[in-house]
Length: 235
Image (cartoon, rainbow, N blue to C red):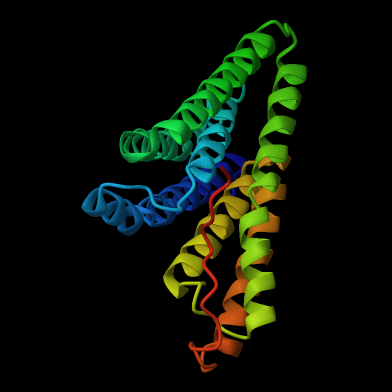
């Protein structure tokens, strides 16, 4: 097989993995919709916190910036998935602020502005780095750190499932979507020889496998043993 043919096959496989990752990510992006239906129906955010959506927005923005041609011109799928994620998170935040109590609304808006300001600093600062390799390493390192910080949520859920011996608060399809998206982008990163993509998604794939294993291990446990809410107020 010629080098050009091998390269073409590699590109097709990489793009297929990236497209699959985008599709599976959509399942994650729409997962908060039931929560926001409840918020709109009740006209109140109750005890829900908007912080997770703001942190998720920052993560999407940093990873989106990494996927742009200014940083890594060979990561179109990273750009598209995180652009879509940023749009979803921004819409969720707007809805959340609309129905939030006034005293908490000020804090949420302040946090959102801080995140947007931080992202602007990252964009401006990275563009001051003339060497493209150094610029890519800088933004790529930030994206890895951001993605790894997002693993706090699945780690918390894993700990909760083990402690309660119940999968009541770990929906199967959400865990499956997380695993499939992480595995797709892990493969995408490997085929693209991009350490800043396959390392964090490799970790995400492992956590996804652990979640699925725990689900099948504890799925028959009584759902009445635990009623502890996952979403709490950070106010």
